[in-house]
Length: 315
Image (cartoon, rainbow, N blue to C red; front, side, top):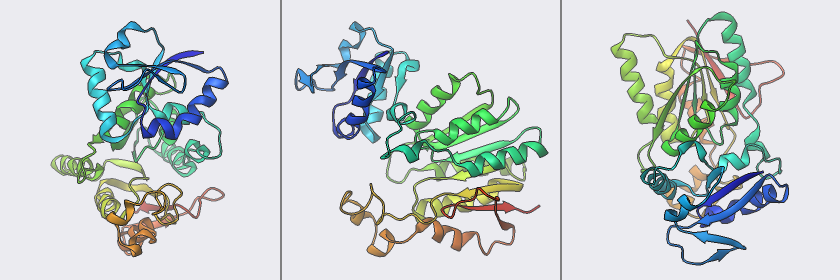
């Protein structure tokens, strides 16, 4: 049983508390205390609340960060200022990776298409480079890195805090021997993985290369203005005979269980009604892939899902 401190007692803590409690009931974790920035109360749900400065008084195996966005970044700043061992820090992904409940089980399933394309490409090349844009809880990242060898490189793109935590986790796995390259962006409104991809594009051109990636899995923001731009850049970054997978081409905000207007009213401030109910990744594919003569749609027998589209860049 692991002894844990839980950092964060706000909305994210309440959202995932039942999952955390499931681990407690199964005797997998013991919650020693909850860390609150202001220590506004002494107890929450029967657990002692402490301030961040009190962490040094406790013996623990892990600290679970129960926060997202700017709040999560602030916690990481406090962790570094207090010189807490980063190897003991985990996020919500730590809880979800091994959780079998129906409400989050889908997050634990890796993309089968990328695994098959990696196997196919590895048969033809001694070393390959794979990119995943949008890592979620890392289920696909972990299985990808287990397939790759010491001569291969795995690139991952997402928010800085998520990338940092994923890389810490991957580096702790004995099965992972590939080179790991994390490209994180901030939570600022107009910052995204597109900027990191553009930097790689400039670097590629400066070195006069024909591409960087052999296999790309795009599972990012699921909106046209970010993933449309990402698609255009990725088309240049993919090597001849390389692959790109578009995930969730049938997904839209209106039918999402977590992002629909009833659950997430702010979505109506971000998009028009047409955009909310439009399958924006399918729009990206229709706008930028189907008419590009350099790319041909690719199918994997007995694996390809209707929710994903795969393209190969012809040599």
